[in-house]
Image 1 (cartoon, helix red, strand yellow):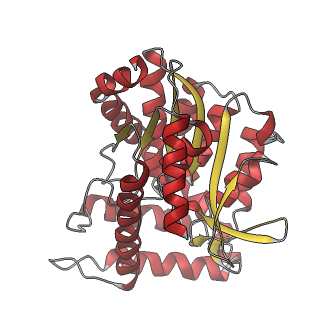
Image 2 (cartoon, helix red, strand yellow; image 1 turned 45 degrees about the vertical axis):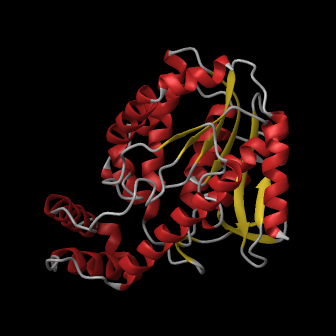
Length: 328
């Protein structure tokens, strides 16, 4: 039944394709790597390429929400490059909820400040966000209702964020079933579809090295946090920080050890890459960009400048393809 539905989706998408001088974006998930989406938007704006709709998964849903809500691309870029490691860490410091490392309250506060109380149906661009119903395993497409809740549901990375409860259901990250929603973008909005893939494995798999300089930087960062007076009043948080220091300080053998967390990350990456390949066979985007962001960890939001540069480079190299799609 699922295969039949996907085939119908692909056929419907081809019938709906239209050339009106604007693209439909499909922005994928990948945590901090997804800041590359903003670099792509910068290039599109510089060359007068209009966006008429966006379908987003995870961080792609968040950046797509900023765009559909009218935030200027320059403001997005400034926001993305304003985070240092301390601000990043504060967003993801464990508050030990059930179902995840962090409850997501701080992220919700950030979303409320930047998005407000907008409804999806009132946005200036077509917009959908993808999440997964935790109980049924079904893909959920948010196309109406509060924009903040749609984004929060879509970015609920398992084991990091607690699932988001909305209308009596629990939702996790849309990347679990659809890392780059180009099929949904075409089905909902037609084409041409420009997809941006930043999930782990989007550019293939490499040896999972840990760069020593980055490991040492994280050790320094965690130790600085431990020195803060308020940490002493949070036993669970202090223990977590000490465990992180011990883990990073232990170094890595050569070749790197396949510890439990790394195994889980790699398995998820393999699953996502295979999922995207299968969806491409059914309903491929007109253009697929894969910015070179493999060296950026999913939670390293303080590396915004690198991510934006990778997005710009990928978009610049694909401009002839993009313009050809628009020309029909």
